Image (cartoon, rainbow, N blue to C red; front, side, top):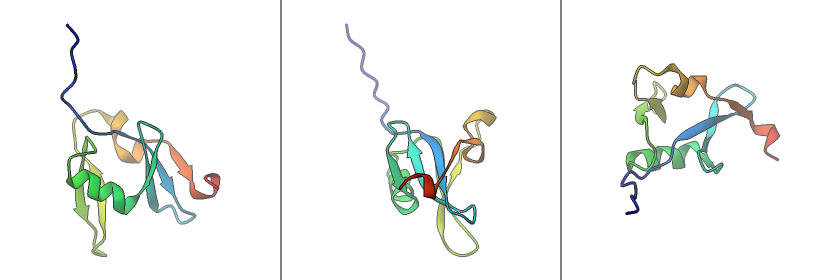
Length: 87
């Protein structure tokens, strides 16, 4: 028998930040980089695992890790890619 996983969804493996340190995009487990707005939309659809969407004081939506006791998968602890490294 071949077992297929019924879980779908990506995992965020890295953050893309601008020169001000703001997250502008996310790197997924398939190495795809998606903009923050697209990541929020996908997370709302359940296509990104381990995160919830939140709204900042500036009324901007962003992703936040779902607390699970594992500090190694918290968004703020993930590797950072600077925007200027992407060009």
